[in-house]
Length: 218
Ligand SMILES: NC(=O)c1ccc[n+]([C@@H]2O[C@H](COP(=O)([O-])OP(=O)(O)OC[C@H]3O[C@@H](n4cnc5c(N)ncnc54)[C@H](OP(=O)(O)O)[C@@H]3O)[C@@H](O)[C@H]2O)c1
Image (cartoon, rainbow, N blue to C red):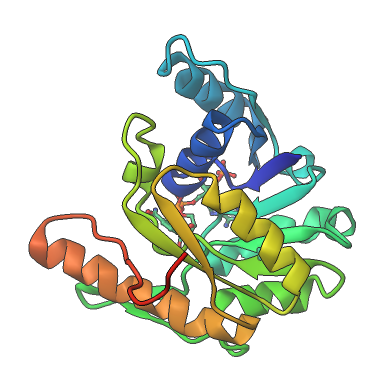
């Protein structure tokens, strides 16, 4: 299964690309500027001496041609980022990892888009795709540190159960991560909003925290 990451050159997309490639997936890291993604992939692969990684720098459009597509741009750029190749996303699983946040004074706060979340906004712009919201709370730095298993849970939600199941299976392959089905895409708003709380905890306690759910036996 190939995975394409639109906006893959940021900290979140590049860390996810590296992590997914490290567990055996074929990953295309996309950018508006393919030269940038090719150079970044060369650095990422070079930093993992001796590891065989099927990771390629590409245009966003090439990334959108993959079996599963992750949109890893800022939330207010998602629509613009995918607009040139909407037809490529028809019928596909599209993962939304964006958090709808805005800076208010010195603090990042949750913003509620008109449709309730960045993920629901994305789903409305590609009604023929199966949008799955996931990965919001994973800190990019830890995600990209391949030598260390993560210590985090991922909450997944979607209006498409088969797509949610496939994404749970994909993400559960990341060492140290448990993945839970949190329900329909209407849960994406509170999941995205919680990231503002985690970021403020990070600032106050000078750390990078994630979440763990208790009470569910797996
Ligand atoms: N950082 C984290 O720890 C973290 C964790 C979980 C989830 N997230 C979420 O994941 C997403 C990506 O986070 P990030 O920190 O990696 O973001 P970022 O660095 O701000 O942006 C990621 C990439 O998006 C592309 N992009 C930026 N503005 C764009 C625009 N106007 N139109 C099209 N493409 C644009 C850029 O790629 P090119 O210039 O190469 O095209 C950029 O490298 C965000 O929505 C964030 O909320 C982040």
